[in-house]
Length: 497
Image (cartoon, rainbow, N blue to C red; front, side, top):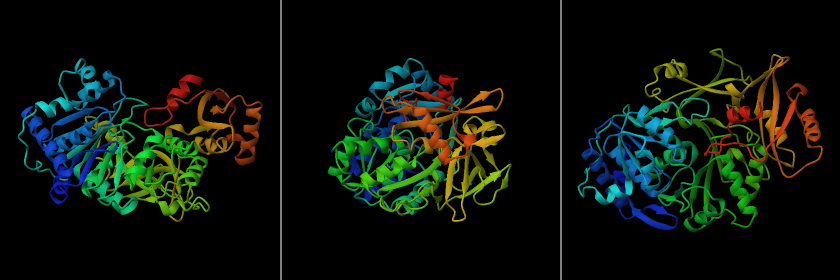
């Protein structure tokens, strides 16, 4: 089952339907999308790419990205999407580690990478012009266990690892989207404001299957006002957004950039969505939100908090503080030392099912440490209630052990963010000779607020156990984040230690 067959099918059934948009402008119909992918696939074959060979993609968001992605599969290759904002040496490491045969890139990236890798780097637009007019008539046959995508982790806590995802993994992920997240129709439109090298690109699959529209903003990234304008003009628009993007879109509405008209679904994930931010977003944009919890090792498919689970902004659902229930294609459990724990008890979240990776590329040791008897050990801490809703507490590496007691940073962060003058907050543990670790809160405040630390102390003492309150507060103008909006706690520890 080759994922490129979905593009081939949509091109046959809806040849003249709009497929790719750059801003409001149509770039390709489905017939044109498939034809360009097929021609690029033949060019890759002419360059020696055979089924099972890796092809890296290092470029910014652009409609050509989707053409390149499906061309790799059309030729039977394995896509290795690389974060466009990495340093060339970081990108080169992934190219070399994945043993990529060739790199598809753009004008902004190809020269930078060509200087530091030994494999050929093709500017995808120049390749389209110079390539053969011949096309591979249909996608190479591939089995469900054949690899389709090697997903490299962000590497914020160490060397990136390449999660091996098969065609079968991504088919199951896509069908779970239809079953649990959103029933995509051909007149829907997916806006790619988040990086196509990660979650947003994975969601292109189900939209190709349904023959829907794909829009890349002219900015190539996220701008709240731009997204709101596109949604209004295109209608039935959805997007995948990090929590920070949801916050920025909410602020754009409050500043008069639009009201969310034309937005169908906003799928958020990739980091903690704090209740205060979510309540504000729902009040401003309405009941358009769905939350997914997943990892690169089981992409977008651990749990889902549906739009109906969210309730309305007047009456939020009681489960709004959770990350939802398990997706329909996986089993999820919570364990402590490998044993199941009762409902309401924190433990490590484990998942198994057809979306779980096959292992890590060229890293059997890391794979053996993450996969146990078919279960993926996520490294996340959470608890599941009797109704099956999972509350995500923290990464296991972020748990603070102070005086022998476990403290989960997120519950402290939730309290701090209820203060009206706190814009951002992140809680970490730092070594302490007496307590083992102490709780340190790094905060971003709105202006100079007198007696802020005392107010935060009182707020914490009113809401959580006294031993959980921060022993130290550090003010910063901004919190360090990667380009997906995730706060870099490793960097914070370095900055404030």
